[in-house]
Length: 204
Image (cartoon, rainbow, N blue to C red; front, side, top):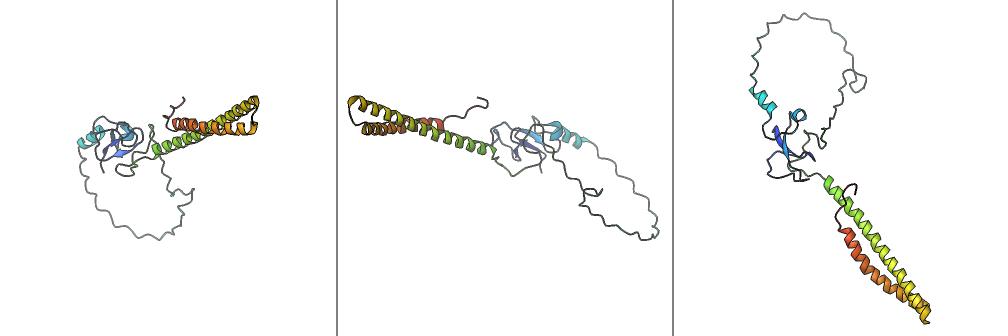
């Protein structure tokens, strides 16, 4: 496994093979990262890790002297062995659960690599949620526009018949139909503007 890889500081995706552009998931510029010493020294500007270079330049320790021959062990009496359940939390031989240390800059842990060229689903989930909200807003915009123009058509048609001496009910219904049709056209335009409008900035 390679020690120095390219890693995205934003989403934490790592690339074993060098890439020439920004992160393929979020578009952030990738930087060099040492999988062994990265949590201590952070991101690097070059593919050479100074800690790895220092370890490689350190001279190897001299071989240990052979141990003197040990005496033959004396036979001992068998000692009864007690059975210890290592699954109990109070047992001193139970293995402690490993601690997961999150990097201070966020993202995925350095040792977690899903696959080469992995894609993070978080940006797609956020985009889908934003589109769903805009779709609901567009629907209610269309509904409000149609109802408003239909009511306006009812009032105008009824008022025209009242002052002109015509059939108030027929005139009001005809005005409502005309106003509702006009409301559908105007509401569809407003709904499309809401649906395809750029997302609002956070806090805006």
